[in-house]
Image 1 (cartoon, helix red, strand yellow):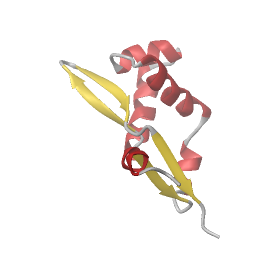
Image 2 (cartoon, rainbow, N blue to C red):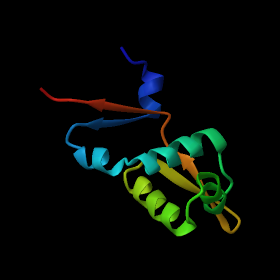
Image 3 (cartoon, one colour):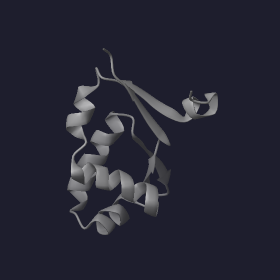
Length: 94
């Protein structure tokens, strides 16, 4: 059984979110892991860490944001990507 505290912090999905599975490419998962591990101070810093073009990283970030997986924190002129949910729970229907 999952605790109420965990459920409050989790993103709850069901198998009707199949687009999410298609969207989560290796490079986008690498972006999520890097944000979690390195806490980059900007999109440019993230692009440098993952060794990718900033415009491609930004497009991936916008897509991850549209699926509610990340958020942006405005820091002066910079946007800092952050992980929005500690846990993602996916349920499958029978």
